[in-house]
Amino acid sequence: MNVFLQNLMDLFSDEDPIIYKAVRQKKDWLFVPLFLRGDINQVADSQGLIHYRKIEALVDDVLPFEKAVLPEELSLSSDKEAEIKSAYEAYRVLRLETDPKMLSDAPFFVEYDFTKIDQRGYHALLANFFPCLSIEELDIKANDDFSKVVNQLKPLMVGPHGQCVLILENHLLIQDSFYAPVLRKIHANPSSSLELREELRQICKEKGIIYTEEPTCKK
Image (cartoon, rainbow, N blue to C red; front, side):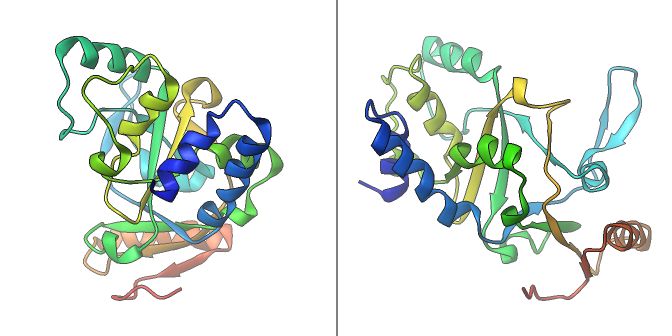
């Protein structure tokens, strides 16, 4: 069995030593440089005000989670799909990359250093961090019992190798955001607008973190 899938199964073991070992194993996966795709997408709040959520997340030192959705390639019956979508109302996800080269087409991306996480963040995030796998590697079947949490999490782990996902219940978040001052670097795409690059440069200056526009990613 794949080590990441085995880790997921061990988290739901009936034996506490196995669960603790599975959680500790995640340190090797979370405590490495991880990268978030930036964008300049606009979202409106309940009062109709427009926000650039990924940029505001940098200013506020929060991780911008999103609603959980089923992967497009997963085909389920209408009943199963309704069952799991209902469960997903309680989840929010944040997708990260281990290789910044996967984000070279983004207007900007950010590097996180989770070794800087505080104790509250450590306890909330570590157990809920999962490297991504394919549907086949996760052994997802159309007749799975999606009332089980372990089976609910599997589709959220679907993604290309090198991608990872944080999965939290929304009651742990404020406006779908989690406070975590773990920013290390902001990389602006040299082809992005001058206005965006200047704004990102100013954020880095105020926070005392690294700003770069290098065409190739260096750590």
